[in-house]
Image 1: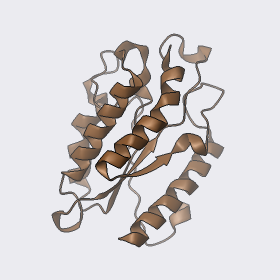
Image 2: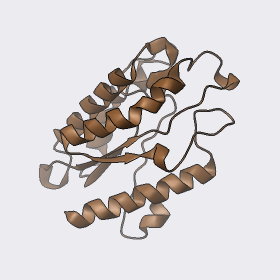
Image 3: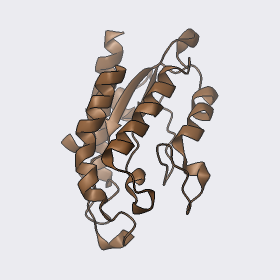
Image 4: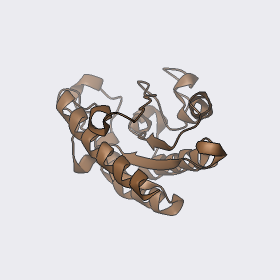
Length: 179
């Protein structure tokens, strides 16, 4: 994405392995809760013209027993938190792009950790699209461009990362050209 956008753009990455939308992880720790981390991330990088949110896959872990609807509701809470954060230029609302993660596959690598998650993950794009409509955020469906790696069924391989980065960059350029 950074290469596609070119000079004049600053891209700040705040990814964390295992991060959930707003669930404390009883195995990996409460620090994986995205809602708790969000205010810190926003305030430490002020001002932000745009925030791109792509979460939800880790919420599909069996231990959370979350439905696809639960995950989408959690994403909506995060989007609304970003919008009310005053983290944009001059305390304004930053633009938000919400990205539905690509559907996952259930493979042996993670054992039972994501059991039942693949079926739920297929439902996420439509539900997250509805969240974007309700909140006025821009929506992008990662699954329309990439798929999860057959190696582990969860993550994207390097080619998929490049493709998704290109598509997100196009969305960023179109969105910020409108503002």
